[in-house]
Image 1 (cartoon, rainbow, N blue to C red):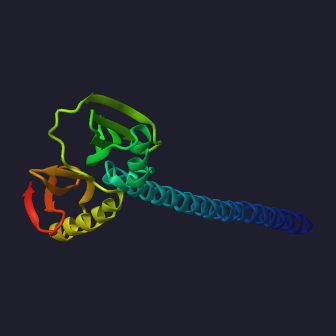
Image 2 (spheres, rainbow, N blue to C red; image 1 turned 30 degrees about the vertical axis):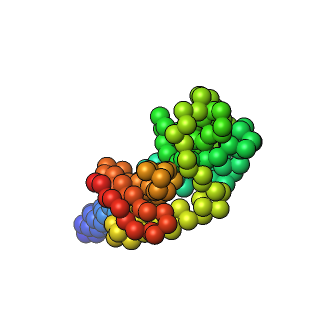
Image 3 (tube, rainbow, N blue to C red; image 1 turned 180 degrees about the horizontal axis):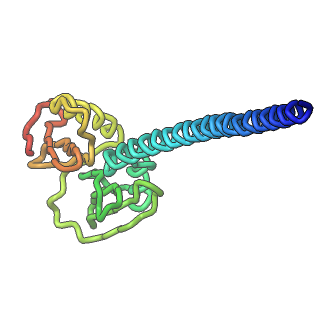
Length: 220
């Protein structure tokens, strides 16, 4: 009788031990699941932060590209000039006191923006090129007067050039065009205002009667 009771006690103790071990084994996967969830959340947070950083870089690149395009669109404009037309006019007279000016232009020469001023006196004809950026004299050519000069552009006449530039802008009606050159020159004894507009691929030339403001010619 006592042996049966002892055997049953041992069996019951073994069963309880196995149950306890099974419960400990079942708890381990739960801990692993919790760890994996935390790691996944951390990875997702890191990825979101990386995506935001990438978006900022793309935005900056687009902005810089737009600025570069604007710079290229205005290359070749008379607005690049640092030296004023009046200063260029005075520089010519400093080189040749007493001379009269019969042609005055601002234009690009081999990629350099230059004032070209022609004049004369009783003995000689002068052709002076002045860098419109730094004011240096690129050329000062002197020839004998052939007696065919009659023009006399006054310095205060230069101010009216802006009027003719504005008139040419109005005629195009296209804000993609910009003034790339202008000038005052005598043709058959008449003072002509010349304006060239450009959009980078096409040029339009305008000739105006300086005195009347009338458009004489338009070439595309």
